[in-house]
Length: 615
Image: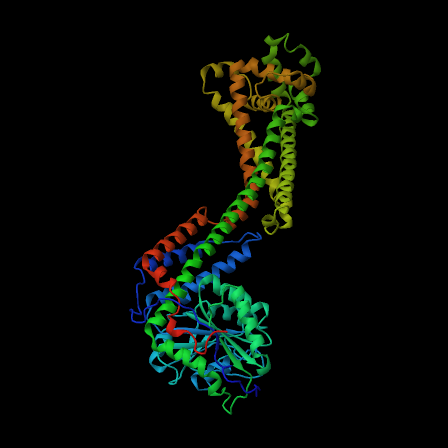
């Protein structure tokens, strides 16, 4: 059994004067709920539910917790309470492990309704006790709808045990919550959820633990929400009553909670039923009896807590909106790094088609074999009239060089594409790894091109080469073109066009191109000009080059999608932050229209000040 010392006269009385105000005990307890307020809260709940925080930013975890907490409070308390302002007043009894909450609840209702013992945690699932006349309201499940109602004790924290006690006045209910500092995570979470659904917090602490950090964190939360609070300082040794009570009262005042009624319960024995002596609990029991009998006072408590909870939504939702904006900005930043990496790869390919690098090595050698000898290149421009015969002989007599040239072009392009894709993947990977949100989205394979990239690159080049040949054929629809090219194979012309694409954008060779191609750029251009004429060369090669770059862009975009698809999945809605702010603003406007602000400004009626004077 728990031992307590006999209280001195007056030590069981409240130690601090209660809140004062101008509440009218005769006013309608249901009061105005504001027709637009439930709708605004429902819209806010939808906006909170739509907000997502999947990217691993410093603000994400806190935002997810706040979002879940706000959703729970809307479902558990705000919406059902607004629907029934005249429903029984719910007093949630919370406190630290071993503070004596269950013993106190049992004593106040004069029945052993909640298990109490030395093993911790004792209260594993919450117990709600009310007058039999009020059981229907709590059994319907409108308040705390996520908890399954039961008539029996349960080890499941997802249940709510309902108990009736005739000694408890109608209009008032106690909910014995799990310990706020329980070693069981689920118990701590449930305690916070229940406290958020309270009309009034009855906070129980002891002389040994009243300065602990965890209770004060919750008291700060209660102050921010405007919740009506009453404090119980339990198990106070007679010799320390004045000192401990005065210190706690001082701490409450420093934290802006000086108006909270403070009841001091001395250390004493419990009887055979595990109940505290009546003389110890009478001051607190009398205070609750007067509260239960005063409809106006109960309405004042409900409205003050309700208005405080509504007012606290705005800054909380503003934080969520900022976190949603951060998610969107982070997703944009990650996308920008990927886009920059792959746009850089496109520029490298485009530059490679300008600076003649693709004419080096194997392509140059195969081009020379295909068109003719070095002597041919040196004399080509002087003997342009014999060009058609020489080119026709090269095409019809040497099919193997054409195939080798086509393969060399393919190999050179594929090598370039594989190189730029590898560099882009590495740059994108490195960019994401340096970003806190990106690092969590990475998998090692992303650091390299896709496993099928070589095959796709080869297919791209082959398709482009076929496209060039089709382009040459389509140009044949022009009669003048037919007249000029009837004697020449489409394949030979197509290969020459590919070489021209490699050589220059405007097909006017520069000194660098001549040096790079060892004269082959000049020769290639001369061949084409002799066949098509200057403008035809420019048009044909420009089309072929544009087609190649478009195919390359599509290929690299597909590679970038390996990254971008991850941010697309994680990205919040573009207007998530604005939607949250708008919904919160509408709730605030509805709150002011509802009349709750004026009602909430009035604290407990003076008649409910605890008896026994102020400490």
